[in-house]
View (tube, rainbow, N blue to C red):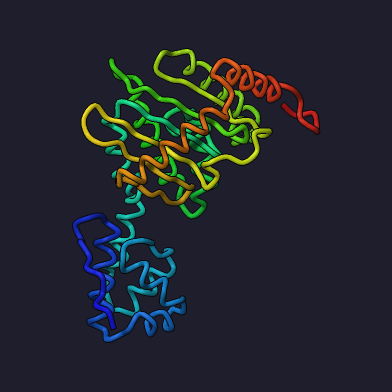
Length: 282
């Protein structure tokens, strides 16, 4: 039987939680399968918790604390994890983002966080984190808006965004929120450090259909790539892999509308959100 993977409890709160859970399980004499049976959940989920790759739901965590006689330690750790505005899987990317001199983004489903209005960000976070309290959602909104200070620096990075047409068509938060959001994108695209392209539906398949992609470039140090979905992200630092994503982005830029025509399409979408909906609402 292979030895369990070594954990670094100092790497993150979820890693600390995983190390604590493994220690408590070993003390209680349970295998991962036996502990999973007691809950009951699949033993593979226990493995993910212990590796710091997943945080259990609140009810599962409470049962783990009870079964392993943790005296509230797991409950306390879980609470700290949930109160942290930026999840572990995004924290290293945010640190890279803060010192990037160039950002190239393809967004498949939503406006990038750096260009989001407060109302749009709130609508996205509420629907993607239904278990969070209002206070937890507001903490995430505040953290997202704080990141936008990058664009207000005296020497901001170049931000080049390719938006899938779905991003400008889907009424996130309702029509009024989308009107405000698209107007905000148009205003920022008039500044010298923000470029927006739109990838229209009629372009069909493209090289980055698996999700959203960000490439970060720096004045010093190698580029990195970041692959993102609504609940997870992967930072790519291996040079050959980053180069492959950079090539995919180059091909995507060629398929997208030029910046001028892209902004015309965004204005058209904005006008459509000004018109009455199917039931006469605006």
